[in-house]
Image (tube, rainbow, N blue to C red; front, side):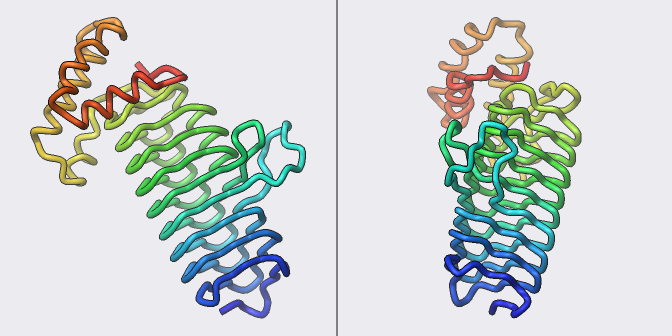
Length: 256
């Protein structure tokens, strides 16, 4: 299952059902689990762990050293879960000691061509990154979030679950769950109702999230006063509670 033209370090651990295409390079301390497909001309450097049933396309660079001047050659890590699709020319860097030592991607993510995921980023499950979307270091992307083409997420920023960042948007602060943002710099434009309907959220839940959005963005309230009102809504909605928890735990501050 390993093409004879591939270059494999002797310390790499590759499951017998994994596939490695021609001219790919698998470096030291790389682990590749069952049924993962590594296309031609892919470079995977370690320490990197890649789970099951992933597809990594040609010319991707996976697990190379972080683009950070603080990096001093430490054995930091990249972890990739199961059933992700990582398309052409994507670059995913390992972590730094200062950032916790690991870059991590979950399961079932759809990563299109030319995406960059920098050191110490945490990417959840079922996300979509359109072409040329980029994460600076220490960014966090929640489950089911979407980044449009050329969207840029600044360092230490977070995008909440089901957040939607429109094409070419520049994310300079945190994007709350379920919110759609657009522009340079990005501004909130409403609830991600299309994504929520596609995910089979009920109209009642969407209505409650719209009310939460209005309290935060449309009533002219101070942030602290919005949070007080949202606590009342959250008592009757787990989704609003997720929205509220994100606001209360945001270290960068939210896009407003």
